[in-house]
Length: 151
Image (cartoon, rainbow, N blue to C red):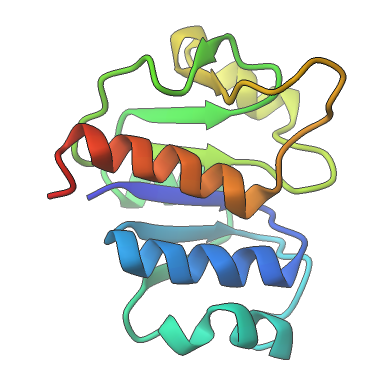
């Protein structure tokens, strides 16, 4: 079981897609406020809320509150400024992955809390800004799950 943490997500369809993917992968989803939308918005429901009963999802007031509540797991921050390729660590059950808001990524104060060896990046061609949030979450989730033989 892995924890997927969306820090202040802004775009409803991305969160809906992550809800659907997390249900299918058996991951727990955590949303850190403020959200850029109402979780009941039609665009969230259309993209993923039909999976809401299958997903394990919670909303938190802060990242610190979330990490404490889930047992202060080993956590990884995903960022274009990360230094470790996402497929290099050996993931453990209970690991948490923190993804930033779509328009600005994780703020420096969050990245600074994360050990340098846990600041991950997904390779991209030079000159490109970033991948879509829901795609990034899927890439990392399926790599972690693959390492556990999809159990």
